[in-house]
Image 1 (cartoon, rainbow, N blue to C red):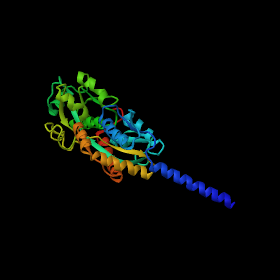
Image 2: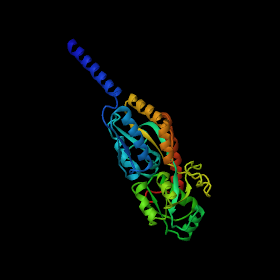
Image 3: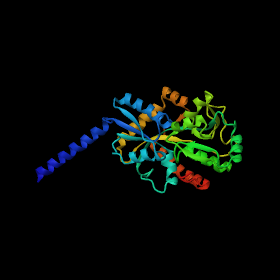
Image 4: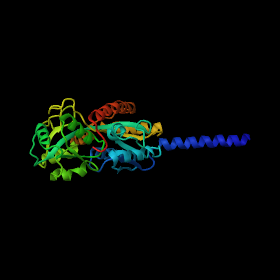
Length: 324
């Protein structure tokens, strides 16, 4: 019996040592970063910047996988149920983590219990844009047009629960206008119809709107952040355009499944923050209209806890439903 006990103890020590070695050697297998939106969107571009940096740094492939659907719930759920070893990560944002709990009767994941926050990566702004041939040049003129044609105008959004969707619904509520919602699978997917004038407006991501506005293909009316963007200082905020307190901005961050080893989380956090502080990375983010963050896991978790009830109140007060 003593010999068996000694052998068992030795085996246990060996297994623990191997596990510790595997964790300290992270990443020793390819890593996937899931994004719940289409290629070319802000979270996709930010994830690719981090993936390229991590791949170069650690010599292990970090691959971005786009899994759009259900306001990014599909990607979020897949990561929630992934093996908690750091090989499947999420570029997750306020759509699935903060907003969707108030929109969906039941989610297949728990935004708090099922994830280990690593760091918020960026905050972005949306821009209220209209086709260039739309007969409006200001938000006030758009409101007047919508009131003159109740139920006849439409807006495009990148998915139920996204900041683009809620921004438009908040606009409808505050302006007291009737505008039909048309959902698309991501910000880039809606652009052809917006450009062609088949859709009358969209609260679209600044990444997608500004280049087209500067080429004269779209007209940007206002920005959805609390303050003007340094990228487009000429654009007024929605608050300046007659909607005090209006704010609808997306943020995204890196998360792992709950139970991921702490040393893996620490390694990912340290390199995420270090990467976001690099001058060349900050320049890339500036060009994309993204504000890098790089906070701690505790700070990231606190943002989720704080904003969930705040958006729940907005959704309730505005009467926003999944079918809107």
